[in-house]
Image (cartoon, rainbow, N blue to C red; front, side, top):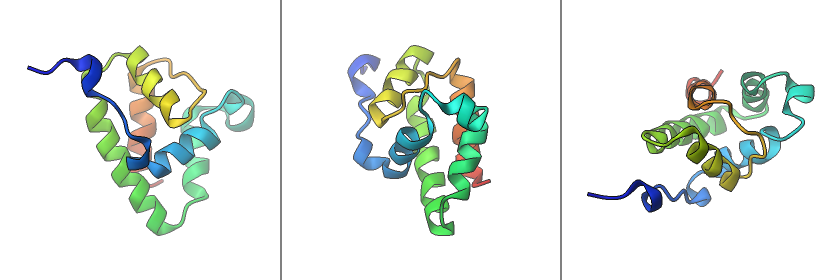
Length: 105
């Protein structure tokens, strides 16, 4: 059996687009700038090329799998390691954002 505490170390080099998104869009001014995390996600997708959208979708899919079994607090810690200063209210909120990235629109 593996413990959850050390086993979910996220290497942000494996998630370059997710890190870029976290730093550039998931910040303290998210609400005045975009209105919601989902709107920020759509703004980010609009800034990406088709190729980048496919890469972001892959990263979001892999990241969602890593997030399984983590608490909301752990998820927010991981997101802050990627560069986000925004705090998600729940894992479901982050899950919606990741699913939007996966769909690419």
